[in-house]
Image (cartoon, rainbow, N blue to C red):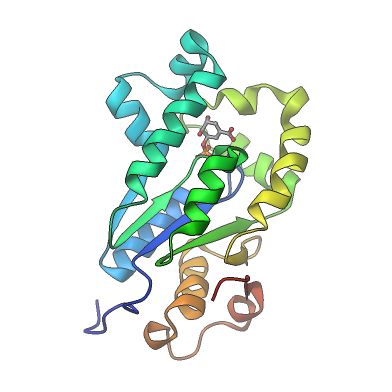
Length: 199
Ligand code: S3P
């Protein structure tokens, strides 16, 4: 870690994107780069419920899972100096979207990639936890279509297809914390990020 401190005006980053976007991997790296805490809303739901997401879907259904998810995100997003990775469906809840976008010192970052790339990444993650939504193949493309415009409301979008997790982090830091950016970020990184409406 260098001696720089993050921009005082941003005290939380919320990562969104479809399954396979790399939210957990990039989120943990980003938190480490900033010297912040990293939290994954899915893991907190599992820890608190002492059940996997798959078990919650199976026993209580998706609607119950979404209520738990919304409550946990509301609580976690209030934390300072925190990178929070959302589950891929969290922004389908209008209340969650409005809440996150209303927090002045937080930035929502969308990790973007083509649908086929994301599904391919998920399928190759042999040790990944069971994702009930991924198994419901018939509705996957439909879910993607519904979510894409919601993801795109993010403050920052990073096209991740050709980027390593480290380059994704470089891209986010370069856009949100220019004073901490690496001296010569790779060209692809700079081109991959664009800022959304809030800054
Ligand atoms: C879901 C994505 C999962 C998890 C749950 C539902 C979804 O999170 O929240 O299985 O609806 O897309 P990841 O995006 O971290 O896999």
